[in-house]
Image 1: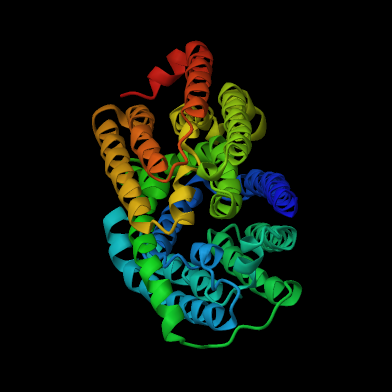
Image 2: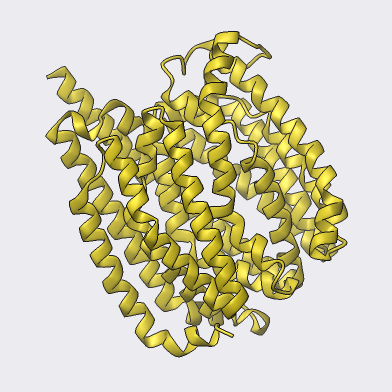
Length: 448
């Protein structure tokens, strides 16, 4: 009876944590949208294109050096031990300082490659966010490990609000792109202060415990390789389009991508926080009850994301027309195209977390590597031959073709649910047709 109550309690916490994460992500996107509407009126379109490249560089540095500290703390039996946590903290601090220095080193070649001289000063300054973030306490990861998410959520939202407020004030005062960079630094500092003041737990110390270090390195080596591939999946579009589009057009694309990606990014946030604990403590292969509960959870998530993507795609053009001035109207059809391209990926969301919960970093890496090669190649080929529309169509095709690889990894860990995938894929195809038919002319216009 206690075991049953424990399973039910875990799933209730997971559902509650998922709803909290989704709500918080929604609130976060509302803040971002509000700031975006204000900032597009205070700054020029090129500023958002340049800042997109700054973000690509910083995210690339983070992902190409990710040691998987968060997932390691979530899954490790030692995840609550002080020595383990202090060693993880030490790794994060050193990594953050190293990345800050590396950002300064990469600024000149990035400025030359993209032909944007402003990157020479903006990238090193923005790199300070990486150094500040390295000092975040492991209490954040401990809260995620135990699905105690409300304080972490409030801290994230508070830090984001502080950063956005800073950006708006500075943009109003200066009209300069530096408002975006300085606001990001202040937001990172706010998160560090809030986490240290408001999260319970002991204060981290610098420590290097060999056993903890070995475990972190063994698990982290695959996460390191995986997130390097994850960079191509998450930021490869902007890195590629930066070489094909002017900064104003890239800024408009980034706005369209931001509006269209809300459902998938929100779902990814939920999956990243709740699925590892569920797969770790209640694997679907252990009982029919676990499998049924996970199926209901995944079906709810998939249906919600697909319906949101459909709404975003259908409303993209009128929303942009209402919310933005004439300089940004072409972002409307980009919203529709990006939402369509993302629909084939929904059915496979969350399966990769089963591999991480089982400690299969190698399988996780191989999946991401295959997806990165397929998606980047398709996006690059589409951009080269058919422009932006071809790039997004190639991305959608690549996402559909990668699903069998995702299912194979899930099956290896006895987490694959064929019925869920059949229902989710069927719904995705129907909704893609609903979106595409009335928008064919506008979508074709993206092809060159």
